Image 1 (cartoon, each protein chain N blue to C red):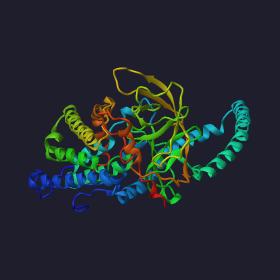
Image 2 (image 1 turned 90 degrees about the horizontal axis):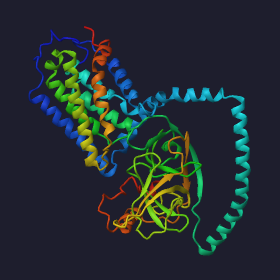
Image 3 (image 1 turned 120 degrees about the horizontal axis):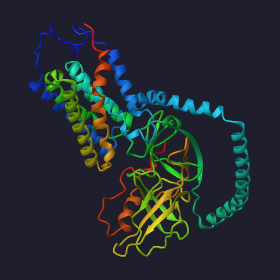
Image 4 (image 1 turned 60 degrees about the horizontal axis):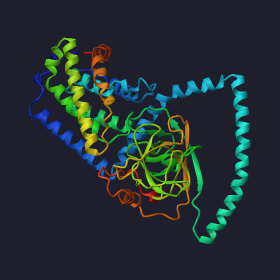
Length: 318
Length: 161
């Protein structure tokens, strides 16, 4: 380490100057935190840092991606053939389903026209690649390579081929941050597909586990039930698969059921997700999902699950 | 900031080290190793504090912390606050710490990093998303154990006079 022999200034640092600087910096940091936590005022600063960080983040994960690309290109012939067979059979099954789907969609359109309600199907989607970057390991969030320049907005839903993935929490110019449905700060309004019962599925912070803590004891829900998005709150398009119920614990001493579900989307293995735009003609008032949680859980003393992240304003579409 | 006058400090080198530390914080690691990732930015800040507190003291800690917040996508300002606090302690005690033998130095660094993590834990709790997973404390001893290595490695970047 260096010495500063010729430095005329006092050898010992400290005194009021250092303490004062600590106070000033601490106050600045505290101000930033309050502003960021309260109202997300700091999107300009965030975007600035995110833009500066993006090249580094990209460079960091590039070798990993390159390696998987190289491995992919040296894939053996037998594996490719096996994959081809599987894809062909998948294709057949999907086309069969599609035949039925088209007639069902027609019918649905007719019925909706009768009821004069507009369909809320996904209209446009954008493929975003997930950067292999480790953000905070105890939060379920990922970074994607599309930002506001590609039209991405905060609160946009992200889905994959199997179900709902999450939503955009931060959209910088070049990159966006997606919060997964399993993040402890995330809540998604869902519906049991079999019975139509509505509830909220909360993330747990563990990959592959959602919890539904607001279902009363007498609710008809069994293991294996499919949970689909209900579309309340206006963030997610309705009717998309979210999770399958894996455990229902009926404890007569408790007012509510303890229900666990496993998300269907490949949250920890997807290389890319679809960011979707859907016709959100019937927009519920923004605090809908927030109000719904306590309404369904009158005896729940725990912390309120839905905060700003759970229901970002749906009207932020550019 | 008096730069370049007496101590020929390469600002380019400071930037490179900082960016490398930030990159090491987000580089993808295999799942089992992930919780053991050392707190590279905190180690860098402490090392710069002990080396050259006038040039790279609290203000450097604050800026590096803010950059880390942006990189990791957490609450803006939380690392800025905690790193400034430990930088303050390190600057205050730097003459003692520098005189310590390596093992004792590591112990002081351990205490500082623990303070850093505790403040972060506290802020998380206040902000309403506490992470109670015990594994969040693993990086503290891991980083402290790495301290002797850091001093050797970074000494190559020490200012030449």
